[in-house]
Length: 192
Figure (spheres, rainbow, N blue to C red):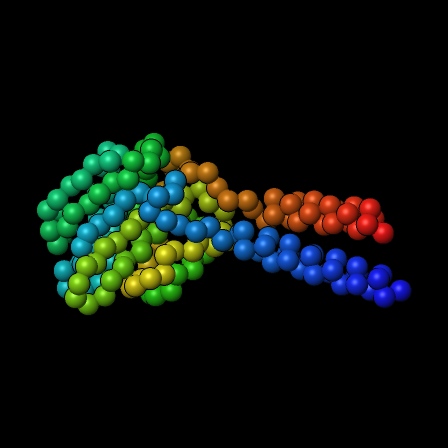
């Protein structure tokens, strides 16, 4: 009887671990080396402070650049724009922005095409990174690098572009969870 209770607790613990791992898999970690990365804006300091309209202009200039190009002296602000080598096809223009301050986790909303993360505050090195998030499922959680994140801006637009490979949606995650639980059940039967 005691052996059966131990097996039941071990099965419950394994199921909890699988469920915890499945929920972590739903967040998409954005980095400067992933397929979503569009490029950077250095020093990324809008004249007159955190002016989203300047960030908006920089994003639209960045998406028109060829892959791997660097453009210096970009106005406003005499910035350096560096385009990643990722090929998205023709990227759509950003048409509006919604500023979201601080934090590193963001959720994709309807119409969202780009997210800009500005890093560094006050004096010192400051840089903004831009990722293309068009084509991701609404509700996908984005996890931006959080170290020295000043703010993020989500830009909407008219759609288009070739979406990078996506993360599993809730249906795929649930299918994987079901498969894992089925496997645990089979292992439990074999051990009994």
